[in-house]
Image 1 (tube, rainbow, N blue to C red):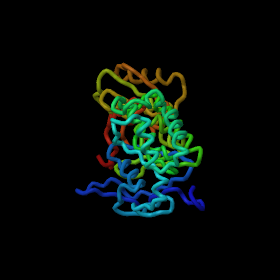
Image 2 (cartoon, helix red, strand yellow; image 1 turned 90 degrees about the vertical axis):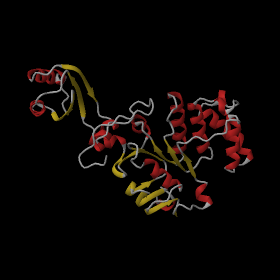
Image 3 (spheres, rainbow, N blue to C red; image 1 turned 30 degrees about the vertical axis):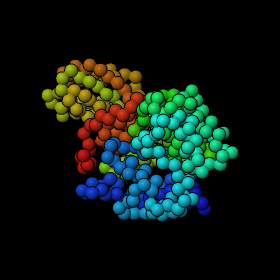
Image 4 (cartoon, helix red, strand yellow; image 1 turned 180 degrees about the vertical axis):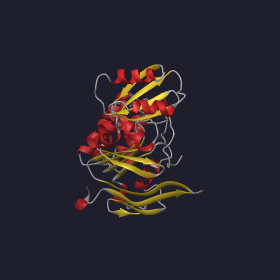
Length: 339
């Protein structure tokens, strides 16, 4: 928490409407305490970046109150701005400078004492594994190296509140580990991180809390493990040769099996939610499907995960499950949800 137990940052009744009547956020109430990592997850257009920009003071909410280190409104005093670090998705780097020169420039802009600059810059170069690239010009960097440097610049002054928009996008596995290690070191020193991410494996592994946005509304908030326990049943995914002629009869037949909670059919794909742990579950499902005239091509038992919880909460297929980029497969929305 902040001074006198207050949160480091909070939004109360915050909404954001853009010209044309597009509502990005709808009456959000959230608090962010010190020494914590909050992952903000949701589909494109769910309001994640708008929330981050409002917290950073880069965007004014349409309604509601924003409080950061006790200051309200988007016009932040200098002492509050110095305690913020905002890393956007947009990369803006001078290709003529080397990586080290870029870090030196930003260290000076942040007002870091000269006596501390060299040691801190060396530490960040090592932390983000830029050592062998530090003396090269930035215009020779790959996209992933540029992204690492971009994030390092945003955290160089070691802000008390780190606001990061997709910091690991385009970074390889080694770079991701370095990034999260650096964030973890800062959080261990009672810093606060709010991170927009499409990578639900990262959120599940590293975040103390995940907040799920859908259509600008908060649909869930809590520790990833708690969200998984409440919203992510074990699911057996089954692919059959042909879409069933009588979908309702097939669903009814499967739902009579012990341990089957719910069955959904989409074309030739069946999703069977189950709390069964018996080893013969697959065999029982196959036997029942064959009795109904279906030919099973493949089965996969998916264990509970934040990805499944996200899908259950929003009706959207999880955006990225393995950190391999910006895969965005969308399924149908739940009835009543915005499209």
